[in-house]
Amino acid sequence: MPVDTDAQWFAEHKDRKAHIRNARAGESEAEFRALGAHDTKRRRVLLWKLPDDAPIGAGKISDVPFLAFADEAIEDTDEVLLPILNRIMRDAQEADMAAHPELYRRQ
Image (cartoon, rainbow, N blue to C red; front, side, top):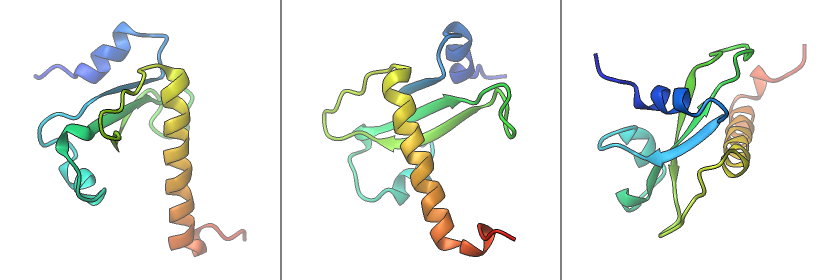
């Protein structure tokens, strides 16, 4: 059975909630293509370890395809990564609400 290197990383860094790494060859290919034309060297994966008390996916590791700007160095700290992840999740929620308003109407 292959080793889950992301889970291993979080096991070794118990104090961390987020991590960024280069995308592996072929990883999340469809999601990256949906982000438009880009140099594949810019591909990164943001990893978020969901809280143990999360209502869905408690303790799981969520991976989010991400494109770095050309030659951009992104500091691998929770202080930098968590706000990026928060913005991505909010943007996705707003897009979903706009696309499916009937799901968000109060009864």
